[in-house]
Image 1 (cartoon, rainbow, N blue to C red):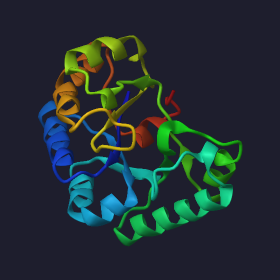
Image 2 (cartoon, helix red, strand yellow):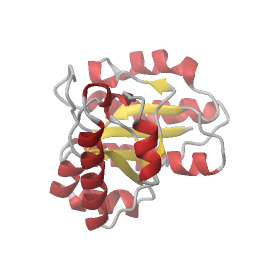
Image 3 (cartoon, rainbow, N blue to C red):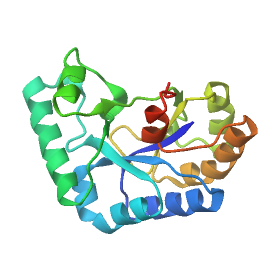
Image 4 (tube, rainbow, N blue to C red):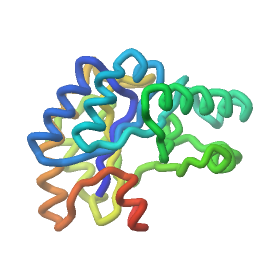
Length: 196
């Protein structure tokens, strides 16, 4: 199962998520917003040094279904260039909100990116307690599942921070292992053809 985090890196919350992952002995994929990544380049280096995967979320957090193809192409090109400047060559792309326009897959292919959505949503943006999030996401935890969480606050978040997400990491990893699986970055699971 893949643990994934969107909307970071955040200078306050991403280090706490990284510590929680370290404590649980788990690795994850971070879908980053490029201007935030530029401001926190040290966090990107730390993610990679700890064995995590860094992937593209966006430059601007816009819905593809409400934006022109040309704008998304520019956004993606700028985002990839920004990540390459930081020493990251992403293979995966998660569009904001998982909103796909009819042409999003073509744009991904044009940039050599694989789209990675999710199959297990924690809805952590609502600010629910970790216990409630775990109960709600548990039925979707099966081999190849992609778990969506956030290490930063994006548009539409109904919470003031990511404390509940940090608190969710340990019990979520324990639940995944109890199901006989090991959390891993999405790219590793995709390479084995097991991503759902």
